[in-house]
Image 1 (cartoon, one colour):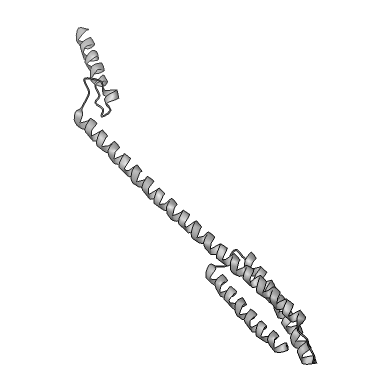
Image 2 (cartoon, rainbow, N blue to C red; image 1 turned 90 degrees about the horizontal axis):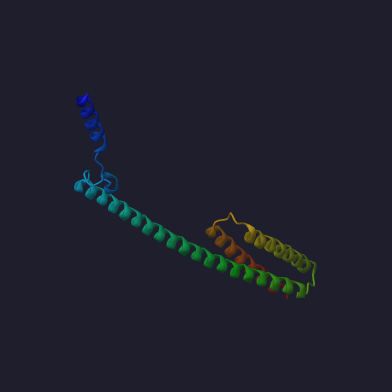
Length: 160
């Protein structure tokens, strides 16, 4: 009986002496410095990886903020150019209204210019409201509208 009790006690002690690399769980008898050093090294690597990830996230945030500022500047520039187109179109309309058409041909040209101004105003509004259009395409359309306004200005000057 004593032998069985000794074997049972030995088994219980052996099960209780399981080694661990966590010094909080191992107790005084199960402390293994090599395992603890390995655990400390792993935690250091984890910390370094987290710090690198944090640095990458900060760089990405800065890049996104820079992109937002660039896009806002481009949008403001676009708005300024569109307001300029509005001013040019209003000026054209005034000039057409002031132009004296003495002949039927001049009267027809005046009507054609009015229709062209109306068409350009509609294109300008469509350009401002189209959010799906790429920036390069908007720039091309603004340049095209500017060229059309220039051509209409020349046509109006011929009416006078």
